[in-house]
Image (cartoon, rainbow over all chains, first blue to last red; front, side):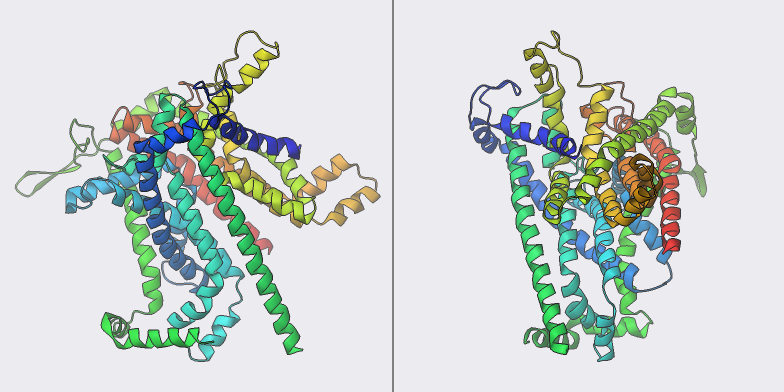
Amino acid sequence: MMVAGFLFLYLPIVLMIAFSFNESRLVTVWGGFSTKWYGELFRNQQVLTAAWLSFKIAAMNATGATILGTLTGLALARFGQFRGRPLLTGLATAPLVMPEVITGLSLLLLFVAMEQLFGWPEGRGITTITIAHMTFSMAYVTVVVQSRLATLDESLEEAAMDLGARPAKVFFLITLPIILPAILAGWLLAFTLSWDDLVITSFVTGPGASTLPIVIFSKVRLGVSPDINALATLLVLAVAIFTTVFGLYMIRQQKRRDLEVQRAVAANE
Amino acid sequence: MTRPFRLGELFAWIRAHGPWRWATVELRSRGYSGRTLVTAVPYLWLLLFFLVPFLIVLKISVSEIRLAMPPYEPLVTWLADHVIGLRINLKNYAFLLNDSLYWKSFLNSITTAAISTFICLLIGYPMAYGIARSTPAWRNLLLLLVMLPFWTSFLLRVYAWIGILKNNGVINNVLMALGIIDEPIVMLQTNFAMYIGIVYSYLPFMVLPLYTAIEKLDQSLLEAAADLGCRPVKAFFRITVPLTKAGIIAGCMLVFIPAVGEFVIPALLGGPDALMIGRVLWEEFFNNRDWPVASAVAIVMLFVLVIPIMIYQRSQGQQLGAHR
């Protein structure tokens, strides 16, 4: 049963990779091995431009969302009961359950109303897409950072405070280095969410700002084209390599930390 | 340990120079703490870009459509000197009530999401159980394999199914080559394809919380039940299922919530009659360019689907908190 489940998860991906090397234009008829679709992909200016645009937006979004999400996570995990906390909790987690069509529509209507009132943002494009992505992906960063802070022993921070460090210094010297892996994970999550988003982007985009998902969606709607298989294969490969490297790095970090804890305990005895 | 010292020097320098000093002194003297600042930035962001937009959606849902850009009439108009005209128009909501398309697609979204969630549970539970019961080395690899699809493009994974399900796709080609069927079976653009797409896309969200719950389960309870003569099937339903309830609920919510508002999967895999409310809103907005009706659909969705889900999640969270 478990094997069947994994087959179900991976068979479509494996087939897609296999057909990306298919000579035939008919996607599902085998016509011999060929890498011509990769060549076609790299000559497709529209796809390359869109991929670069998506990459820029995803990186900007991830950085902004990580800052906002870390601040929110910090406030929710460390500041106790402050005025306005229930509202912030609600606002910070609501994007997680909000259907994308609603988020997209509401942000577009906001941008239109703002343009009418203040003249900003002028038209729609990279700026509006990035703002929209930051708004929904910061919620994910908040959850990651907040849950990491919840499991973190507060005594380290308290000790630093007792020794006279100011709150900002405690954060940068003690808290930040400890929760850095969680923040990094949050950044990657925000990057992926933005890179992958079609629905919200479609609402808030403007002329000339077609991200990769928008280009893929319009290509798929017009019919299956084999160079999308090649693109998918490259993306799967990149993710697989990256996940493996990141996973190994995390495991090594964990082992090093365990070793240091063991040494510290041994030194105290 | 030279790094903290240098950083400390940097802080001292920043505090002594520049606008930072002015800002901290000025704000402190007015009674604002650093905490207020930390909270204020995301707070203002969420108010402006998350809460205010809903008020605008509400406003536009009660305005009238017009042929201009933006395509809705303003609510408030200056009629003459010092006279303000306010026009609230509930026609859009009346339209939603009268046209069966809308409530049918609401019902259809809920049943489709519920059925997909149930199928995910049926496939995901044995998977999670298998992962939790395998050796630690295998366990990490299998967990990674469950998570990997999540990091790859959602759109491309849905696209992969088009190549499999279409009339000259993989399944039909294999079945015809084996001589089982003579005519291709129409699978693409049917409800069947839509269910496959939803289950396939959201299965990892079901497996992960289930795994966490099953992994915590105390195996000796099942052994005790077996010793006392309880049959495995009965033990599963009387011990395993109740004790992993939290994981089952979490997994079901994680699948149901995105599935109910789904647009991409019904648009690519479902037929033209696959009425999902997310798709109806999309088409109302992009194809009919009727912003007021699209806004009314969004408001109804919010009150009928999203707010009940949020209240339910809150009560679940409080229950879990009370148990601890």
